[in-house]
Length: 147
Image 1 (cartoon, rainbow, N blue to C red):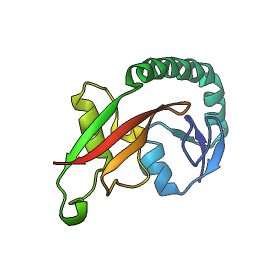
Image 2 (cartoon, helix red, strand yellow):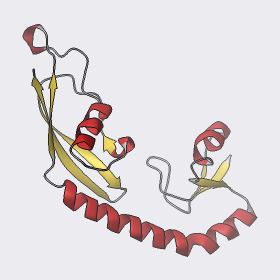
Image 3 (cartoon, rainbow, N blue to C red):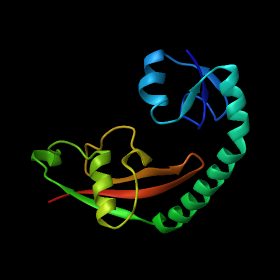
């Protein structure tokens, strides 16, 4: 199924591009979140008419993301975990743990903005990216220490 992307989607394409996706992905993810339109001549015209609005909205989102990045710069969180023998963690530190800790400190984020390739399974200091906008990301230091 061909769709027109209304927003840039990581590993799929940029705004305005026509890409082929599976029908279920389009129907269950892209369309409900208003990230894409079905590729038809009428929708192409609608997209071209609304492109100025989208660009303006994108610029506003980028400005607010930069302001939020300034507040978030230098942020660090210390997560205490239970460990067993040889300092092995019981479980792991996930995006949800980092999200909750930053939320407790007063930062307004969404869980999907925190980029963590795989859960943290060892004690130590890590740098985790917080992607506020597709062009704005901030590194946050995460320290995992034992209780």
